[in-house]
Length: 151
Image (tube, rainbow, N blue to C red; front, side):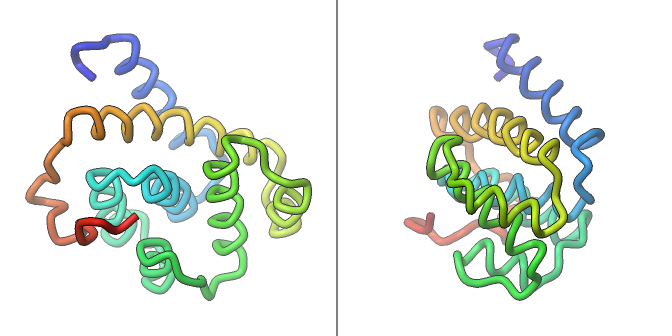
């Protein structure tokens, strides 16, 4: 991104804003970023956010495993968050009313739904950049890389 200052600035500013002002807990933030990266098939960001989820943001182990493997999640609130983010990415921002209702019924706000839009924007910049240049996973995240062919 250093070769495209506008992309880098947008990514850094949006990412910082999401981290500081989204209204999500650190674990919920990591869930959002990890789900987006997994749905976008970004091997680099899935590995990086998996490590951050476990070591820094303290995402519950079962929730982290469920996101990485695409399996059901035990935590009902994180499940609602994961389902909404996944729906937002898969429908390109056109979720059903039921999806939005389930998200808000779980205790999230309409403002947080808009924060998911911000997270999708900044992670898509990062994910697509990594796709373009096949960014190798750093050694620090290598043990969190998904097997090749996993989405």
